[in-house]
Image (cartoon, rainbow, N blue to C red; front, side, top):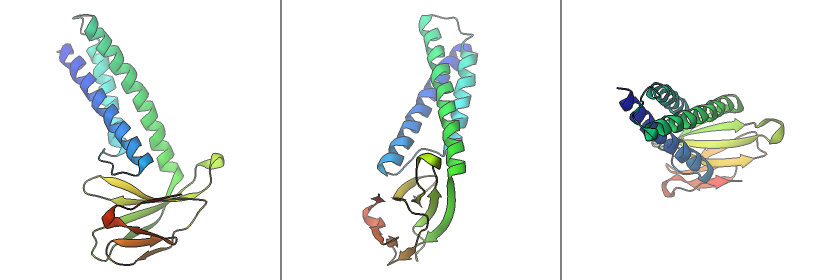
Length: 173
């Protein structure tokens, strides 16, 4: 039984790592993120960590021990990073406005983001997709407000920057 914990914990750890890296990539390059929310990734990483510890009981061979050590190390590190990201995301983002297109196909949440003494206050716009999918479409540093106007069902103007959501346009300052 411990051997199954060892193997499945390792696969779960790798799955969580791939989803986390995809989420980071999508946030940096303003692409659609298909990864679940960060708190679900945190729960998956913690489950992988606990299952990896249970997998230490498997004394089959050296590969099994190495897999357990890798699982515990990666999942513990990933849990710490995800917990830090969850705390930072919770306390630095403040919702300032939610807007929908006239046909309700697009819902955009606009947040102020304050990184503390190291960065200036900025505005981030996130469009909601199906399920938990999200995409950062707007990022403007040195801004603390968001003036939003819909031109039509898929063209939006945020702080004098026009974005065509149908064509996937984004703005990053």
